[in-house]
Image (cartoon, rainbow, N blue to C red; front, side):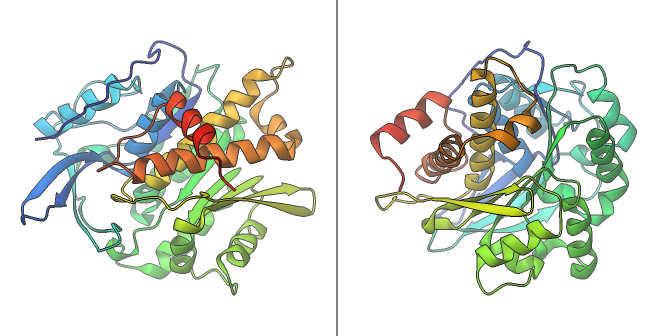
Length: 345
């Protein structure tokens, strides 16, 4: 049975500031007794919930199924305060991922994604849902939305949002085991990355992309050089994370990691929560500015102390998730309390 022990209701009628597009599915997680436990999941679904729990009004784009799983996904989003661009369910079934965790708590995925509800989108439907949203500043996608088979939908939509001045955020969260043509997959991910203002990737993602470099940081620098991104967030598991920030021709690198060892239950949703924390904290700092600058302009002028706070907030957001079973994103208050009690280094 799917449980949702924490219910957060930020203000779902507030105009959305962030729009997300990508998968919402059911994770069937292998348990120690050999049975599979269904959990609400999908990287973009997790990101949407995590943003809402950190008080960011968020609009989720993709349709959900009328089946039982689809109803539970919709309920999970709405309970956390996420708004649905397509509230009417569709007849196609819910997508499923089968997950087994290794000894370190890292997941291995098998996806069932043909003819499913969350893929019933077009570039036109995605763009139409964003029209007239005067407060919307950020457009996010990634993970399974980077499948080249869906390029005809997500690429034109992202291009349209870029033209309209949105801050484009791309989660380079790769699933090479389910992509039949890895060369085409890598090429498409790099094409999408060229549109991004913010890139987020793990060291493992960069290895799968085959970005040149002797270290993950070198690879991140090289990926950033292939794009016009303002920021790139690099997650490094127990080694923490880096935030690469472009200033003209130069790139500054900020680093953060937990000062004490963290007991990891599992890592499901850690990267999604990291990205949500990064964006939530950036928007929080924008709101503190008396001049109320555009997010893009603020990002160009943010001080190193402010950027360090953004990075450490993102890290704490991920840390709280890995200390819990499944993806249970933390609230803004929980994250700030964690940062105060256990400062990063």
